[in-house]
Length: 200
Image 1 (cartoon, rainbow, N blue to C red):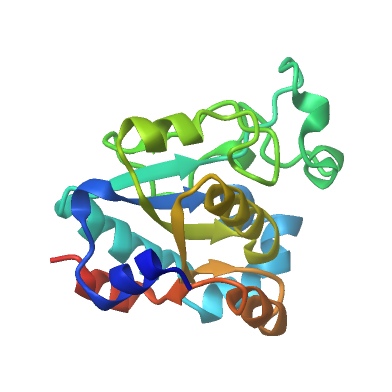
Image 2: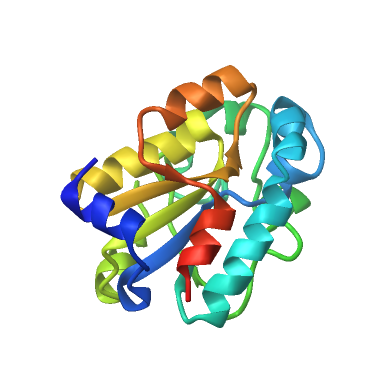
């Protein structure tokens, strides 16, 4: 844990330099289909959707930046073949279908949407880093799916780029609790309830 992370965790957060990042809060993960079935148990037991809605509602209310990082697959895109093979094989996140749509109640007009992404790492091909730097974001609270792939890879990438990343543990999910706990042990984590308490 870095000194900056210790400071953020111990005190109230700086609203001007903080963002909540939502990775793939899309119907492919949260409604139906094979990907949903993979995380359904953990997603439901951890109350991920309710926790996340409560968190981003408070964040927006207090002027904290909310960023969406969807994965959208478009065969016309030059980077289509670079997108994760399982998503292409199973035709998930397909542009123009419900599979690419945001989960109901997650997106607001005030949110930033990272565009151009093609990898598990949400910075790959996207303008996510530009959004963060343009808005002088230093600390990022990360939510989304799945904990062991897109969340992990995005956090590692952003940490390497100098950002302070903290996982909101009960706003993420993967296929089982054992794997969830393993990935949580690799990062600084916080629960949505504790984070909401720090947003004053």
